[in-house]
Length: 427
Image 1 (spheres, one colour):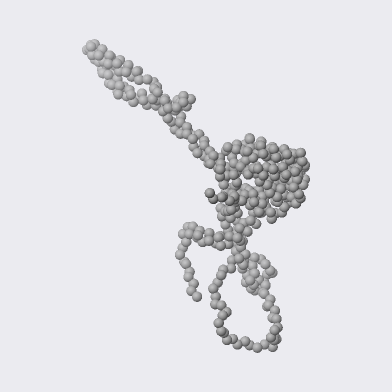
Image 2 (image 1 turned 180 degrees about the vertical axis):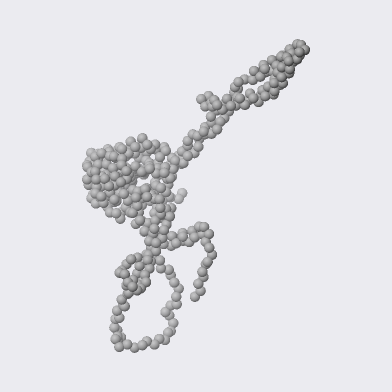
């Protein structure tokens, strides 16, 4: 058997190909670990990658060895304990031998092997988690929403509106022009004035020469005075230009019912769904604001900790959260500059007379401003009036979707159902 050992030094990023090959080979195990790791993160915790654990049994490599075929002659020693047909028990395995990952009791003999821990980066983590998902309703209007323009100063120009005249720049041009046009005349004037001063000091009365110099001086001064103080050529206008600015920013509204029927386990399920949504949005947008709105009979904007762990409870009027969301969008998040997303989590309970009002707010005020809104109902019971009202919107509007979650295991499949890629029919 021949072993080849490559001792060449790897340059920077030289092992990238091997790393990607490893990820492709163990993709199913890595994706399973990624799906489980999502439960340990906070809503906005995406600053790092993830440590993926792969059991040692999944890392076994195929080996080539000689088969058991052929003719072999063996001599077996006799024994005085067994006869033909006896069943021989398997020898007990020593403690610690062939085991790892902390299984079994401590032992003073034997060897073991730990599971393989593999670190993936933030980008690899998100790619594995959302590789076959997409944001709905994005392609047809991403150019006019994600790209915006702002007016910026762009120097000066010789033509423009009177309101854009820059006085300082215009006066600087006027001074420079007048100096350039009168410099030669001022030099001549200085020479003539010096000659006149010498004649006045001369004792000989040379009136004719003096009059000639005085006349020449007056002509030059008159010529200098004819140069206008400011000319249209001197005017400078402030110039403005439109600069393309990528408005790669989104706001994510998290709405949750905190009435008496919503226990902590239900809130934890909602939290994990919001984590997935936030991570998914970071793949498309650079800046993301998260707005937490909790409601019972009244709605209130809160921080993340109060959103998930506050003990305040009460009845249920879901429209209060929708109305607060509309007010916040109008005050802080212009839909022309921000990409608005919303997610509402509830156990389905709502005041019966309020559910039609929720449908009206959703259809007329929220969906026209939002890119996508998802509603998840976390309950083991049958659907209530809010689900029935929302289902009428889901049947007619692609920007709205709804799913039912019963247990923690349903979170990731439901999320994938909400954001799965739509198949494109070939023309």
